[in-house]
Structure formats: structure tokens, C-alpha cells
Image (cartoon, protein in one colour):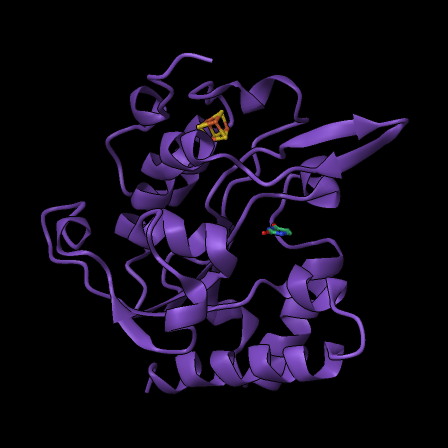
Length: 216
Ligand code: URA
Ligand code: SF4
């Protein structure tokens, strides 16, 4: 893979979400587009007040072309409802817009995206942020957190805190962009949990409630 992988040349100079989504469908900014079915761009209304960032599309998302429509997405929607967040106030997206996987027999096994993929795909996330301009931003899991705060960010140390984006990211457009950010676990971590699944789910809901409280 070329070390210069970046989505940058594919990102149009617009803050219109439909135009960004259309352009993202043609992205070849890193090699992940080669094996995945399609780009899974973010979804939600332009006026969404809360933006949630996951890791990357899963198997179901890759086939449907929409974020968070598989098992982890169902759990996330349930947790958001429990936290009192209406779906039409949210914009859902991922740090990486193509599904990364390895084949195990005929099954496609999710692969954690590499730093290079996160960095390559970051211009799309920046464009979405600049377009939606959410009041509150929620990072779901370590990958999303590191996409926003850099590779040295430790989710375990900052989970549930109210954070600000690094100063250099606060102006991707001409206006200052300064959402309140909450980092929490990824919904798929709840699905993978064994005996303490309920406690992990409750913790996710609690963090989402904290994020929701920042909206008012
Ligand atoms: N996990 C994610 O991080 N994003 C999705 O869209 C689905 C599962
Ligand atoms: Fe482009 Fe991101 Fe897909 Fe890579 S993962 S091809 S940078 S949209």
C-alpha cells in the first residue's frame, strides 16, 4: 500500500451532505475500496445536533450501504432510545467508510482498521463534521476516539468525560467548530461481553445520557 493513502483528492469542496456522500461512493483513497461492496457514508439529517462516530461498517452495513444497521447498530439504537435521544436528531457515521475484513472459509471476519486507514479516511469525517456541525459528538470505541484525538488517546482514561477536539481540528471550515465530545465504548463491545453484558450496556446508556444532557 502506498504510504500516501488519503481520501483528500476525492473530497469535494462543499458542505452539502448529499454531494459529499455521492463523492465518497467513488473514493479510492486507500485500498479498502477494492474488496468491500460499497462505501458506507454517514446518515442523518443535515441539522442533526448529535453526531456519533463508530469504527467502520460491518458485514451487514457493507451489503446495505448504511451505517449501524447490523447487530451492533440495533443495540446502539436501543441504547440511544433509552438515553432519550430521538433518531432524527442524530447523524451516524464511521471513522473508516469501507468494511475491512479477512476471509475465514466463506465468512467475512471483521478486521480492526489500521492507523493508515483511519488517517486516509479522516478527510471524510472532517467534511461530515464541517457540514453537520453537531453540538455534541460521541466517539464509539477506541478507533473513533483515536480518529478524533490521535493515536495516543486512551479511551479507558477519558471515557465519559466531556472533551474538546484538538485545537487544529476546530476550524475545518471558516467558522469555528467546537462540539462537546464524549468518548464511550463501542456497541459491539457490549455484544462481545459475557457475564457483564448488562453492566456494559448500562454504562453505554449512561454515557449517552451524559452526551444527551449536553444538548440542552
Ligand atoms: N460498527 C460500526 O462501528 N459501525 C457500523 O456502522 C456498524 C458496526
Ligand atoms: Fe476512501 Fe475511506 Fe474507503 Fe479508504 S476507507 S477508500 S479512504 S472511503
